[in-house]
Length: 389
Image (cartoon, rainbow, N blue to C red):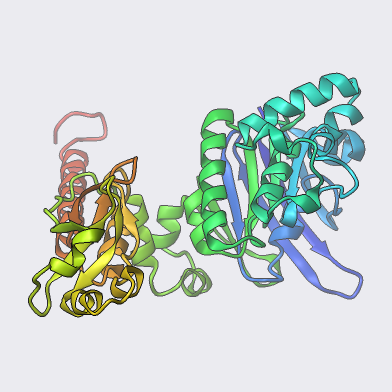
């Protein structure tokens, strides 16, 4: 077990700055906890006190019931994985030797550490062909994967991650988030992840700790509860006015009906006959979407314009295994007002209408209300001894 507990922890710097104030928090073993909040709210300070990179001014922190102030800091850190922004890799060492760093420090032979490092590269989705490269020869996303691999190389029960994905572009960031979800489902580490992005927090976290000014913990709850019931005005403001939209990410979309979408191949665009306001989805030979065209786009194609100049961007795509937020986003980001649903191979399966997404939301809420009424009725109809009153 690797529960982490903060008991009345505060951190005040010599200039009087209160970085963390009276933090009481229990992080359960095997959970993915996200510390989130604006800059200067104490989230990184709180996380770095777990591996004693920062010492608290008062209070105590325990791991598996043991006060970490009684543990040698070097030994403590060798048992805790640590991932920072841009990977924090050693520039003069190859990818393989970067990943093997901690096992070597713990006493493994270099040969054994390198063999294990190759297996960890596989685990985080990195090609073994990158093993002999240096960090400067990698993309930002690859560097972050190497950073995660290095943190996992010694198989630590605890993994600390300090805004690890903030320096990469949105597409790579989404890929890395998905990878972290896959790894956690497989490895069940106790993860403490710091971010200033509430979307990243609710995507990754089993529980979210929202920090406010002077490092005061404002709310600690599952992400659904943070979105649906902010504990303070600060949390409500930080989460944003669109928290209801974010909350759709916790609702399944598997019952949203799929509509038929008119499609055509790229070679047929010039021969299409469309009325004003009509749209048709252009697909490739494998039935994967390329974009939408309307009557204006068809006329431009007949006039000899390149196909890519005639199509409107298709918006985001939706997979029926996704959630209501993804379904609604696909629909409202599409120029036609119809979201494109694809299967795992990227082939078009059908279309999603925003009205159908809202109808599904209403149906789910109705079922939840009925279940709450049923439970309330059962509780109200029983005496304290469990018999009916």
